[in-house]
Image (cartoon, rainbow, N blue to C red; front, side):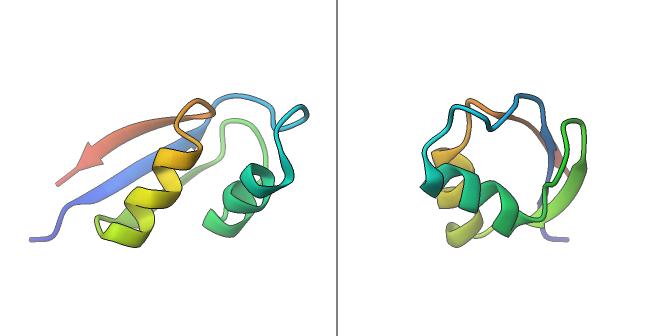
Length: 61
């Protein structure tokens, strides 16, 4: 079974640089407290590392 991440947007993107805003939108997060599940791969890990201060990440088995 592959690992997945449960990602929840916890902070506002108002004062963030445009690249971080686009990363959050590209992942599918829209509003604060919206949650998505992502597969554990290198591309998703890179995106999560870029916005780690805005989100809460949980590992789902």
